[in-house]
Image 1 (cartoon, helix red, strand yellow):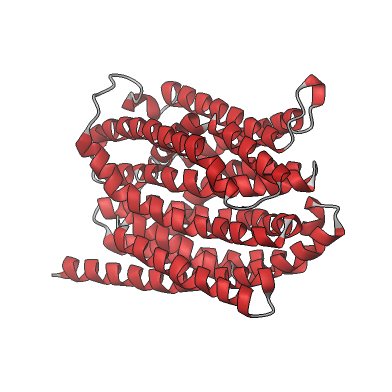
Image 2 (cartoon, one colour; image 1 turned 45 degrees about the vertical axis):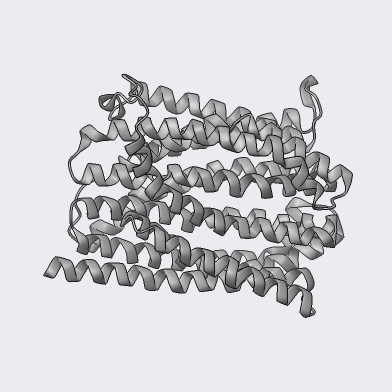
Length: 452
């Protein structure tokens, strides 16, 4: 990365940073996407089971992996401040923390998963698929968390094209193993939905191996010697990572878990409703990779400029990111609105599931704008290392405003299960407004200090 002086240079830099991140995010998400899609072609019960399983898996691992995302602003600010010698220790301590977090998640699933599933009164076949899917995925926890740390380090150096290449390899690897393990091709066991989980775990181990090899053998990474001279555990480094990362992780958790909470609440409506909801959520999540990628780019660029004390440039990158996401949100909404029937048909041949999925996709189109605003605003705030108030705002928006609104619409109006998606729209809109106000306050505060 380098200093930019004009808006044109900033736009080009934003594209340079964000495009590889987008390809990376899409490729990483395609692992889950094809788990859902290929399982949907196997059977409705397996689709519902993987849907429930991923609703447990995704918010837990994303929330804890979000802690490791703090490596990005930490390293970005160290680079901006010309403190390259401190980068290695930050990344190594992040790897230690990644292994610990993986162990915590595995322990949680091992001892608590069956009890949680029993509380949901699922059909026995669905509960069995969900349990086996999650335990299969858990085999890949350590490589997934360590890769998240390494990826944050690579991205913070501005080498986002490297993670793009690594992640591009993940999708075909995952599809290949899904083909073998879900359907039992070429003599492999036919595992159904559980096969999708095992295929993902194998994929995570392979991409970690690829990332490690690149960091060991390619510039500019070799000069940092990340995998040499491992230090002792540093409590002060863990505190620094956690101080920034825990609010980031919790913010991501409260945002992603609200979708999981909706999935659990929809379980009372039956397998068809769960399957239709998952179809809409799966495709919408794919479209969300664009504002999420812009958000991650904003964290890198804003963090770099803040580290260099170029606060005016940091402000420009913040709102340039938001504006870009808004433009693309209209395209996403159009895709969901005008192609909702075609999208539903991609996933299922069951006419009842298709009909309901089409209705869910209509509501999904409505929250594209709110999603496009809140994501890059959160990314910019992380670049400023402003994460505590952001977490509180996200918690209130999604869980205090959004989910209760959904419950009211679902249970006290004629919207039924679709009422929960109206609640999602309300929560995301509240988040977009409050987080934008927070960003304005932070920028105004910094500007006043800089002038004085």
